[in-house]
Length: 183
Image (cartoon, rainbow, N blue to C red):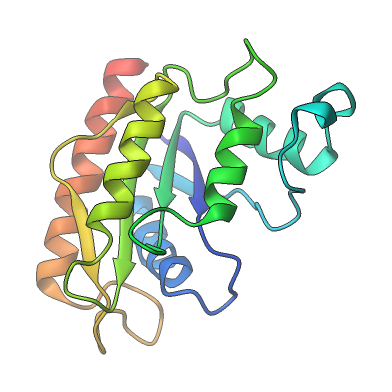
């Protein structure tokens, strides 16, 4: 069985290392029956409860992508020891209006890449707290913190580093198990 997965990248940069990481994950996931498609967040306005009555089209598109997906992969950078504001904004839109939380019960996997030694551990911790409140079903083990080093991704965007490929394969296997439990 092939699962449809919404990929959310917590960066607006076209040259984001996390967007590149998602590209490598897309390739690994394809071999495991995961069809991962990025759900865009760049056009979302800043969340304001007053805008819920006239829900923005970009927010509706994001909610639809999440709701029609079997699961979600969130790829987050770490900004100031937390998640980027643009990612929090996307989560706020997708969880609203009250009672229409698109994350509730949704299998979700978290990963992040950074050049630093801590990778994205603190951002992922904050993201887990948010997703727990929203009742998302997250992959807890293995955790996937990726240090983006030269040569980690090949020229075709595939994960070239054997250790990272092994980690991400184990992580995707755990995610697929969560998807199968939810089916």
